[in-house]
Image 1: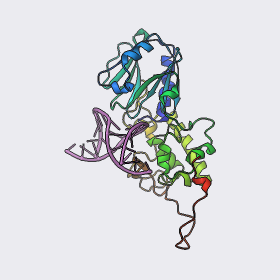
Image 2 (image 1 turned 30 degrees about the horizontal axis):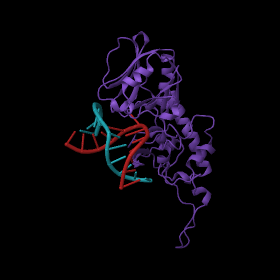
Image 3 (image 1 turned 60 degrees about the horizontal axis):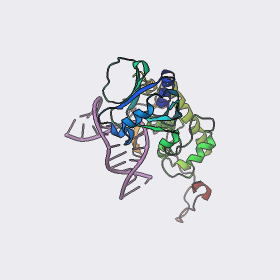
Length: 297
DNA sequence: CGTTACCTGAAA
DNA sequence: TTTCAGGTAACG
């Protein structure tokens, strides 16, 4: 469920709540063994006990809860995970899979209906993550950096945006929204974007992610913040899960198709399939494209 | 590259 | 009863 804006919202809320707080215990609830990828909660508990949280970082959709012993708890919420900070005596919640017991009786709970989420304890955050593309809201995410990640790819631009090795943190909501804002057809080959389209996409990615953060993330189904409250971004989406509604900009009917195995929402009038610029003059097969543009760096 | 599996509950 | 879901790894 949570994409970059949702995870960033959690990061911002969590840090002041847990910074300086000591962990007095960690436990896994029955049936949630996969959460730790095979490690036992007894092992994690013994390592965490007596440590205190310091800062909270984020890379893509991963959260890094830093500890004062230089280790880091890396959390991925996947589809339905959420972290809840709850004061002493707060009622139990369904689908709680793991609990960090803190000093003064407060708890940090990992709640996750579908049990896809993960928690790792490592020395460096990178140890718990695959290779990820650039952070789309960082200073070094320039239009050139974006193009470096997408050039030469034949896959649909929608699929390329969802691939965390290209750009980190974009998921299904914000991919559809960024493509709508930049007026790009989701099925256009990623490597086919022209310079003006690249600039538009780059700006749209940053705008849609920043809007998402500003509205505290999108709660379509399961996402909640550390207090269990919903975000507001679902009220501002232009196409996502608005199938058959009229487009805000042109009133054409928003369509839903499957791209890269994921539901994809777009306006067929605002985001048309781009016409080929070259006209076919003979039956001779077309020449190969510029080799530089088809080679992966 | 697209498809399937991982899980479980809500909505159609 | 069937379909669908803010994600990703492992398939073929």
